[in-house]
Amino acid sequence: MHRVTISDLQRQIGEIQDMALKEPVFVTRNGREKYVFLSSEEYHRLKRRDREVLGVEELNEDDIRDIAAAQVPAEYAYLNDLLDD
Image (cartoon, rainbow, N blue to C red; front, side, top):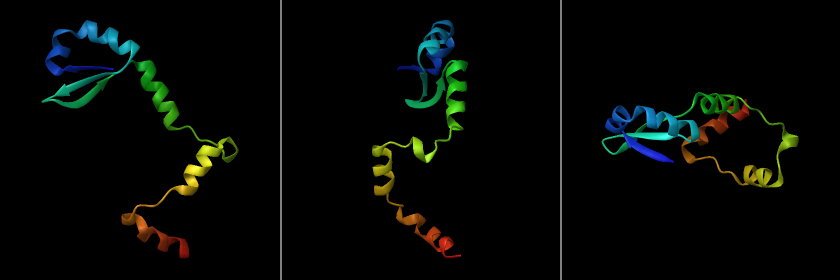
């Protein structure tokens, strides 16, 4: 994973474009990550995955164990009241 400043991006756009074809490039501003420069192929792959739905039969034992052990954060406890309706 590469990190570049906005100034670097402006000066080395061609090189950074080539890097982004291989892996995401984080662009920083004032020392903080602000943007991620990535290939359109990777972007579309991520968007497709965002919409991916798994059936229960596709869950493995680790997934089932993790779901069973999950705890709802206290700030969302009020949503339990909706289950009573």
